[in-house]
Length: 340
Image 1 (spheres, rainbow, N blue to C red):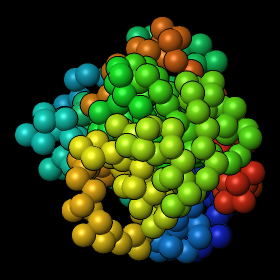
Image 2: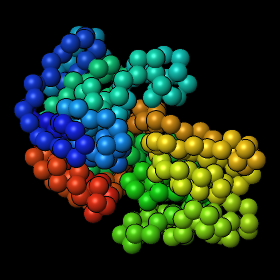
Image 3: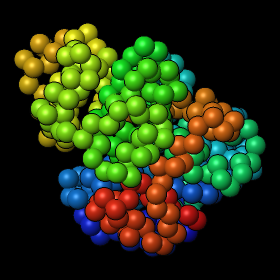
Image 4: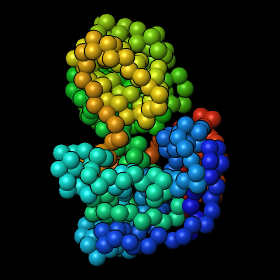
């Protein structure tokens, strides 16, 4: 089969890989229908994370081709959406709603790699969720978004306790930030402030429910949020970038007693303890437990109540994955869908 391999930073190739096979009786083999490139894939692409013949990709939808003898919840022929973190969905941590920290957690990125024609998914019962039937083609991008960016944005909004009567501020206008805007709207937020300075992304943020756009960053961004909230800051703030500036902007934009949900993968971010102490805010974040939300998100998509698929603004065949990485790195694309 064909699959994407990152040899080293900036060197992305599509080459022949061995077809996956059932190893454990809890495995499933999925023939992928679509996959995509994530903003977090740019960390190794830019040399911030190591890359050495790394199998790329962690977002995926497709048809179950084969299952191990112990798999009970999915069967060959089912169309499935999978989380980007493998989980058994039965351990104490999973049952508490944090499947991304499962005692058997394994990241799909690197070890499995779903920017490929097929993938072996361990712990299939705890990781894969079947759709109600075979989806119409136009639903594929939306279902693919549920595998990571939608679930991550949703977790960020939940962690920030977005809801009725709340003002929500989303720091970051990438795919996750836009999905957080969508989630905040669905959760009933009264006001949603999207921090963006890119016209196309601002337009999409408005479509998903943003009521205000703030283009300022850093201290100016914090001041603008406070100006819009009677000097208090937002009740709920979502950090979806992962840089020093964005994280401290998110902390500063959260009102006393408010909630910060942080989901931007970060490197070299240092939070001065005294600033966090005197901020007096609640914080929750990390790798999103997408599996917790998948059944509900799939149903919302199936019922056509939400369309997260609009976040994909460039579609390329798998063989052109290298161009997709380049487009996202250069910010010519928000998120790239790869067809198979």
